[in-house]
Length: 183
Image 1 (cartoon, rainbow, N blue to C red):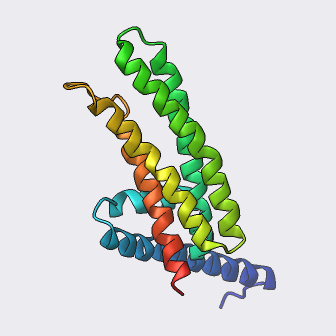
Image 2: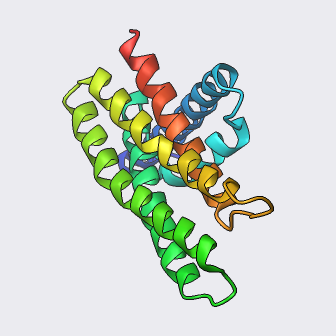
């Protein structure tokens, strides 16, 4: 019969516990995303799960940590959208109207970043009501940006996908914040 050393037993125990906590995080993400997508027809369950699982870093999480992850993802996304807008503004393919819309969108997303940072601070201070208001305010950037392009018949927003992703990331944060606020 083979005997295991104490060190081997510790390693096996650690690996078992690590595997169990990782599974728990994925279960929490899937359960939380299921609840969020059922409560919001504009939120994709698959998008929610893939966004959070890709950024959960494989360790045990609770719902509060998922809110922090989703808010940080949303802040990073707004920053990336601003970079995309800067690149598009240099493109000569866009006419004056489209460039004006892009500048308006840039301003909206520039304002959304500190608003989301304020939401994160409010959330971490357990001021869920203020966090909800701030996220809701930032979320408007996507629809307002999209609406600007619709003011001219036939104009197509080059930011449609980006606006949708930003909207969904905010919807995830809002749903999770509201779940915690109702406890």
